[in-house]
Amino acid sequence: MDIEKIQRIMRMDPEEATEELLESVEKYYGEIPYILQFMKETPELLVPKILYDSAIIREFKRLDPKTVELISIGVSAAVRCDHCLKMHIRVAEKLGLSKEEIFDAILIAGTLSNATVLAYATRVLDSETGTKRGSGCTVCDVGCNGCDEDDEEPVK
Image 1 (cartoon, rainbow, N blue to C red):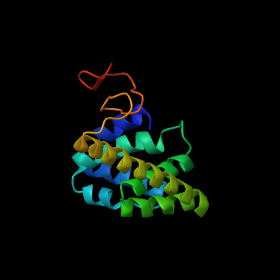
Image 2: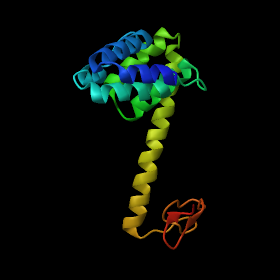
Image 3: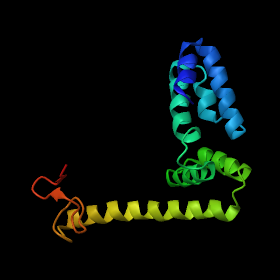
Image 4: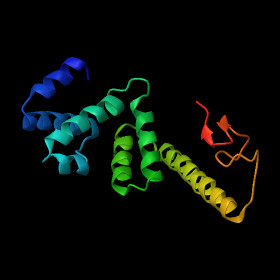
């Protein structure tokens, strides 16, 4: 969405802007996500949210729509947002993504979700049991990535 269109929308009556933006969302997804329907009654929140989301998801040109949907599926799966996951699977199918491609995104999300559980829980376990690993850096524990071990904050 170009800056002129954003400025035009921002000058519109809030209810008209809301309707126009929701129509564009429905055109893109084939439906209006629940949260946007819910936020329809608060245009002062909805309009900036749709403009921001649109700039990232629908207007972002460095990633193609199929890749954006696969990322959306993976993130929705990882954060366990059932409604988001269902909607993004429907959109992915409309874009021609196969069940196997969608499943691959879910598998990647599962692997990363598992890694976050292990990374967090094993650090807590080591901390609580007094176990030191790697370089002794309690922030990264794996070869240190540039943190100052005295204050354990990443070096800028």
